Length: 588
Image (cartoon, rainbow, N blue to C red; front, side, top):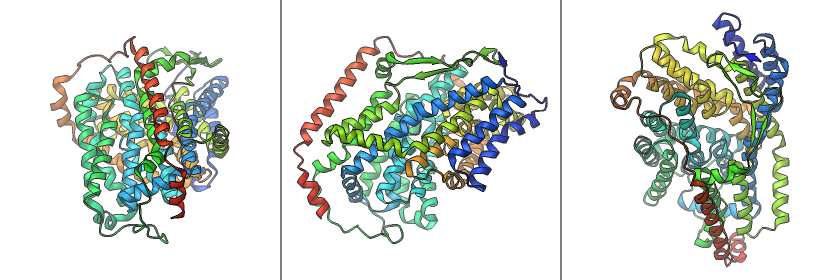
């Protein structure tokens, strides 16, 4: 039995300094010494294991098994999601359909700035709201590269765009976990976030364009950016406040995509922004593209949206979870006690091979092969080559998660959070940093809330401020921490072919993440009066909402059957789309 000690040196500053050491080491070897990502992650894990034993007196078998648990989680479900996302993209490319997708986007706008808003911000927010866990970064960065963006630019901008929707990602899972940890209802927390997250959602589109092309570039397209920001932030605020935490990302992203597409039908920038030495294709004819060809080309991503939506429904997941395989980690399961809660930590590897989002994405890819008439042999060949392409990236992700689990189980992560909480009356200004650090270490806003949610509410209560503001600060700070999480960086690098160059992505991400974090810190600190006046009447309104009813299983089966029938119908309808049309397009 190992009892966590969050201040092993009896000096919080010194204990936290040693807890921060693996993070500092990771940055130094990546950015200064330019060590490849997988070696940086593995060596950081070794350092964390050594500190866990030397400083925190954690038995070596427990720290090693913690690393094994994290590495397994890195491969599944995180690595599985990345494989699925890249597999789907590779199918679109190898069948020639992505060329038509590019053409269809150009028919809306051939300005690279506006393409970035459509793909990385709006479509990425939809993927975050439906699936989360790295899906939006993997898919949107791959799509941007296919559109002609350089790999590094695609990775960095996709990470930046993904900050806006993180708090409500995966159908509100971060908020629902925060509710479980703190005792507040998910709807109550969502009302608080309705006054925080939409502000970031309004800022990010402007920020994206400034980062990409500077203030001059923003001046040329500000009407379209304004439309995107307003059509995203207002629906997010209203949905979060009145409907709860599950749908804000979905509704806001769809609203922003529709609004921007409709706006671009009546307005286009006078100056079309293209990359240097890039041919101008604005005057190329799009007459050869029929509606059926466009729908067929987009069918992999349409099927993806359908499957992600299905996999996110409780009624569907309750059916798919019936085949889960739970594997308690030897020596580790219930061998660690949290000294604050006096509870034993479960260490169970959940092999939810059917209900995980990655399986939904991979099935969507194979269903797309059916629609696109790709043979089973070729489909399997593309899948195998995708895994081979990502093997180093998967090693990096596993190494990063191995460190995260050692840091969490030993108590290092909590030590870092406790140091920030010692700031007294100034704590509201620094509270988002705790969530930011939590997501940096764990790679997940959900995990950061499970780790620091109670600490935040307790600290806010101690300084006489509404406790729910603490979880709001944790969620919002964690959202902008997602872009610097080693897990996110590894996913972005693996998807864009930049494995081994993670340090270059970090140089970009750290600066912009800290700028957005500073904005959130100011919002939390100066916005207290607004929070109190709006939320005071609803304080303590209800416990955490219960899970879905027992009847969910039947409806889940029906939803899945409907989805498969729709795909078969689509294949039949699109089968008449002659390959001659695609050949004619290529010839053109």
